Image (tube, rainbow, N blue to C red):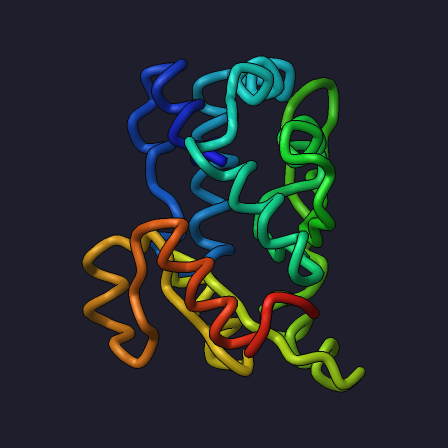
Length: 191
């Protein structure tokens, strides 16, 4: 899906909301800044929901997910929020998504509750403790511990700064490349 915060920045003209986990490795710092900006500019949850309702999956994303789900189970580990994710997941055929929770009061975002710190890496290790083999892909600082914990990790559509800082992960740019690598990791066309 497109970056929600970038879409909000484009809609509102608040350019500082364009900052994402691709630039800021500390999620708490990033979210505190976002919440402060929302308050400062009087931006409501309703406005953000309007922006989210206008978003569509990236070209090829649904087809990629459908193909991937035909060969294995898929879980999206995300640092988004349940309130943001629902309409987006509907467009993607309701894949499983594990994410966080926003706190709101009177249509204002006042805070957030993380599932837990570094939840992506914890989720990978929990799945591995159940004897699942985990193959992961991500594009941001907040994905790198997940990629390191996974049995195999790939950078996908990552910006140059992330690729340069984390050369231990193969960097891919196209859905076909990622699907081919995932199939190779699985060792066959099925689970």
